[in-house]
Amino acid sequence: MPDAPPQDHADHAEDFAHRYAQVLDYLTGDRMAELGIPTHQIGSRDPVKGHACFMPHERTGGGNDPTGGLTLDSGVLNPELLGTLPGNEEWARGRLRDRMDAAIAHEHEEARQGGSHVEALRHAPETELPISDGGRHILRAMRPKERQR
Image (cartoon, rainbow, N blue to C red):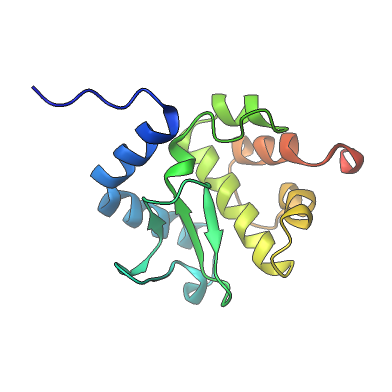
């Protein structure tokens, strides 16, 4: 009988991410391409895996490297990723595709804003990327209150 999945949401997400890392890497790269992310920004160099779009061992949702390379990670699978932060309920209820779109748009904006997480929170809801309505809904809920319209 297989082991039961971990009880902690973050541990469960990472466990799942490791099991399906190859498929998640492919799907992440494919989605970034569909959204119009330039080829040179799809993925990043990983010291262990080489080039990768999905980092199963990370838990933040996504990242970007100094050259603008974008990645997603096991955090997109975790419904409790945002904890008590703004947008947590929308994130928890969101479909995986919407979470992926929100994370890709956020990381894209963060890379464009010189690595500023706060500026990415402010600008990502208005991204020019053709993300899902659900992804845009998550990003609007995450935006700092002083910038909501």
